[in-house]
Image 1 (cartoon, rainbow, N blue to C red):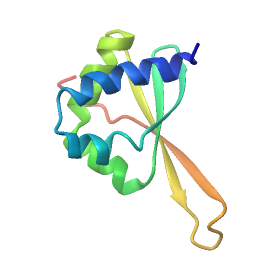
Image 2 (cartoon, rainbow, N blue to C red):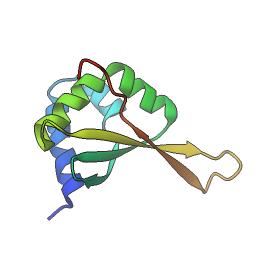
Image 3 (cartoon, one colour):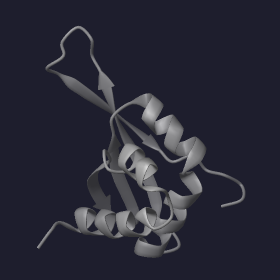
Image 4 (cartoon, helix red, strand yellow):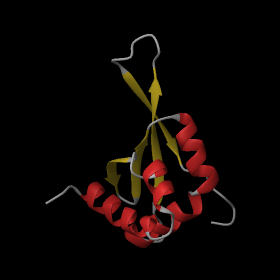
Length: 105
């Protein structure tokens, strides 16, 4: 049996896939890795700061709606962003960023 964060994210992906075109899904959702689920907070890892910003700009409402459907109304999303260290390409660093809070949510 898969770990809870993987199961939740896989269910989210099925819903997301039905709501975006296939190219967008492959580009913006397939690279995301689920990291952990603690209480009502799902942490996902994204490949870059740009990737994080694009998701927040274009897909934040879909992500929130889908995660709330899977975890519950109080669900929250946290991003773990891979930070490229150009001095040493073998070492990747991550930075955790909580999801932006909107007054409408």
